[in-house]
Image (cartoon, rainbow, N blue to C red; front, side, top):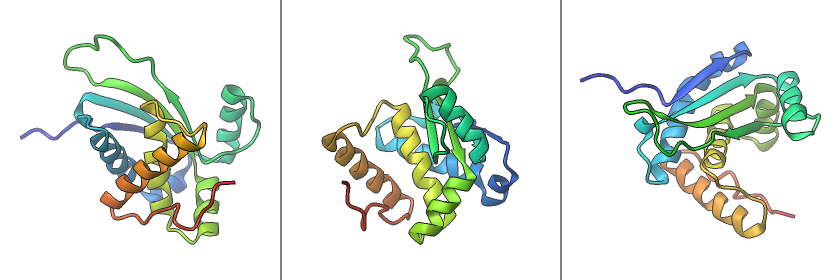
Length: 164
């Protein structure tokens, strides 16, 4: 039996992501997010950039007008009405900063792997059109993230948080 093509195509600029196993955890997290939404992961492709704060701050400034580092950015692809037969449909791209992710994990008492897994799930849900612009959307997205993360053995990241 042929091995399934990877769902996540990673470009790792920051070698600390290599040591953290970003590619494998992103593949696992992205597959779980798609399956939770009732989608076949083999039908899709996601690009992922593993970078540092400097690079993600530049991307954030270019694409969102916010000249600051952030943990994850997402760029949903325009959905094709008729993707090429036999080719996975691109859902879009994600970028993750090692510096911000590691700092947030440390501050939250989380493992880097668990926090990065959460950020991949969060980013994939954005690629699928989910958002958290209002409290209702945020609650729905958080519930879905928590369910997906539980399926991966990752604790609820929102258990001790309150939204302002």
